[in-house]
Length: 156
Ligand SMILES: [Zn+2]
Image (spheres, rainbow, N blue to C red):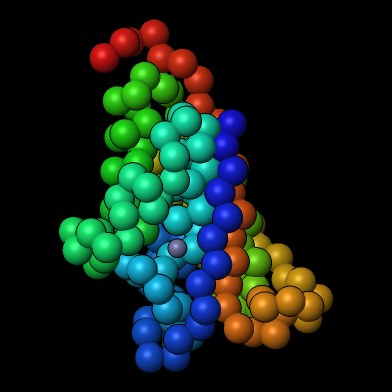
């Protein structure tokens, strides 16, 4: 089992990519690649479960190949690494923390995209922090994820 946490600040000059989806009319996030907090949190959860480090150590935030990579692309790459290391991905669950957008309105769509990216079920939920902290003040979005993997019978 692995855990992943990610946070990005809002940047009104950028489009919002969240949980593998484009959210028109929503405020975007600043940061590395498309700043998809949900995808990045799941990446770290998968890497942690497989004992492979984290996004920064695997890809490096300086690598231009990944500076423009979508969260879904990174998820697919991470899932491939996990499988190459001899693991089967069980499932993942991610919770997006923030005031907007309302994740529940597109939950199934997000789950479909993220599940396809890692080849295993992904559950997506959303919550707020009752006005407290950086997400409550509307400064950005956060996400927490867990993922499970098990040893594969197929040694590579
Ligand atoms: Zn991130």
